[in-house]
Length: 106
Image (cartoon, rainbow, N blue to C red; front, side, top):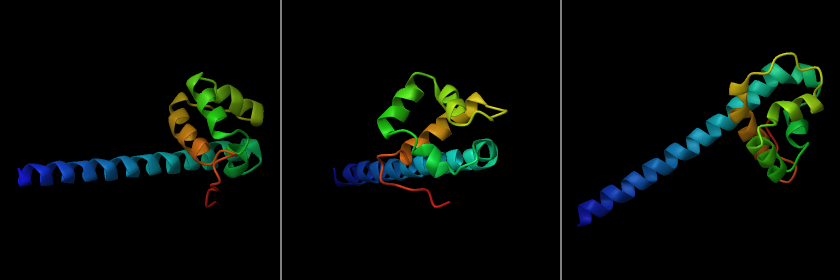
């Protein structure tokens, strides 16, 4: 019984660590996508872009499938948009939304 408890606890901790690192990677990917692909078209930082909406508003925009539409409103000079960016960009803007209290390092 003791071994089963140890294995279960070890698995739980391992899965938790895996989930945490995956989320952080996605946020970092979103920040890189903004910096490399959108920053020039926007003319401002990712922090300002993310702070354009509160976290709940970003969540609603993402769920409604309107990330590209809202990004183009904020940055009308965007030339290229790839649908595959949306998940990582969402993680980034949600993490640093206006009401999050967080600010990206760069």
